Every structure is written in C-alpha cells, then in structure tokens.
Length: 372
Image (spheres, rainbow, N blue to C red):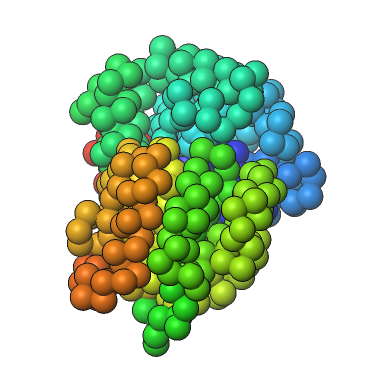
C-alpha cells in the first residue's frame, strides 16, 4: 500500500515532540514490518533540514516553515500526488489542519493526537488562539466522511461529541521503546520530582512550581527538574526566583536521550500538570523506568495513568492537592513501592510494535479495496 503521510514536523525537527514520535514510529514500522511504501511530508524548518532524505525507512519531503507549511501543502500536494500516486493520504492534525479532502479525490485517513478546542486560549494570544480555534471548527464538514485514528478514548469521546461517527474512530495508544525505558539501580538520595516535555503555557508547569513552594515547607531539600525548552521557559524561571525556589528547581533545557532516561530512573515521581493531552507519553516513559506519576485528571492524562496503580491523579488547578499527592509519594515508602511496581506493569502493555500493528489493522479493515 502506498501511503502519503503529512505532518507539520518529522523527528529530525528541533521542535519535534510526542506527536512526531507517534506518527513516525508507526509509519517506519509500516514499511519494515508490513511492507508498505511511505512518503512523509513535513516542514524543513525554514530550509535548515534537507528538502529530500531517506530516513527511518521513510522517503522524506520537506519544505516551508512553521508559519507557511499548511499553505505550501495546498500548492504542492497535486504535484506530489501525481509523482507518488498514493493509495491513501494519512493527515496528522498536530496544530492547524490541512483540509486535504477539500482539494483531492485520494482517500484520506485522519490522525488526531488531540484537539485544543477552548484550551488554545490558555496557550496563545487571542489572535493566534482564535485562528487555531476556528480552524478546528471547520474540520467536521470537511473530514466527516474520513476515518479518524486517535491515541486515547478521551479524544475519541471528544470527537464523537463534535459530530464524528463513533464507529468511524479507532484508538491505539502510544508506545515506548522498552530497550531504553527500563528501571535504574536506585533512586536519587534527594527527593526528586521531574517534568519532561514541551514547555508550553497550556502544560501548566507553573502549577508544579507553586506546589513546590508548599512542599518545601515539609521537605526543604526537595528537587524539581523541568526538562525542555520552549516559549514559556523564561516565565517559569522568573516565577521560581520570585518564590525563592532557585535552590530547589532546575531548568537544564534540552538534554540528551540518555540523560533524560537517567533522570526518569532516579526521580521519585514525574509530575504532569497539563490542562489537556492526547495521551501523555511522558507518563508511560516514566512508568517504564519504574517511576510513578502525579498527573491532572484531564482528557488524555487520565487515560495514561491508572489512579492508585501507576500513579496518582489530582483535580486540575488544585495546587494544594497536587502538592499533597507528590508529598504522599515522596514520604510514604510503602505507597511509592506499590506504585513503582504498578507503573512497570502498566507500561509493559505499551509498545510501538503494538501501536503499529493496531494501525495496520485499521488500514486492512477500513480500506479493503486498496489495502495490499
């Protein structure tokens, strides 16, 4: 089967995150394990990435940047289709949709990690937020006949409420590479909580910093490590200094994959404070390292955390409850050991091989006329 995959970024893009890991881990395996032919279109980071490249089993075509990529797709897609002649286009909506069904007769399968909806106004200024919000609003009339593939039951429910047919939405959660995400030899001697992911406003990492101010009263040597570097980092640094937490909170920015895993292994828990997610792959990565999670009880995160087994959930925005749940894990050794065991058991269920297999099953069942 010839697949044309379109996403804003591929894994070589410096701003690549969980959405890119998801689609690329699937599509690479569609080639290596199931024999499909995949061409992958993404933006070239303003010409800083090669325009054409064979990478990770995929033929990559790159052009444009973060601001014009969706418009350039409209201009270039016809020529790419004529050259490649795909059986199916897989459009991954990660930010602004491309509205592919509006200007091609090639069948389109939609992949949606999650939609921002009203939460975009927590992230961006009103002009940009309104642009994203109304772009999502226009999706249903254009994509209503497409099959939709999502990464959590929360997103499936969200889309069904927006009018998409429930039976035309399939689910396959993200996986992790269990050869990397494994338990370490021991936890840090200093009580350590980490966050790994993009440093965006809607991730609400400021809640973790405010919780640290509370935690420091009872755990003076608490250590918070916030991994990542994005447009909200400077505000978080200022907040940390304002609250007198400079000795307790570290902002190392981007770190190597090896160092990230080492941090996950040494931490006593990972905190994920976002207002909404598609799944929460960082939770599973931490669990794979034997580290429980404290996460907000919101769509996506509540799917990737088994409350009381792989971690603890708290009410989003409730700083006192967030601090309390973290304190429980840091101070209650028996509970932490139980959660560490549960975390490993839960994480073992999620592999990229499984995710790709379920995705291929969708291709086979939903597109029998063109599947080969």
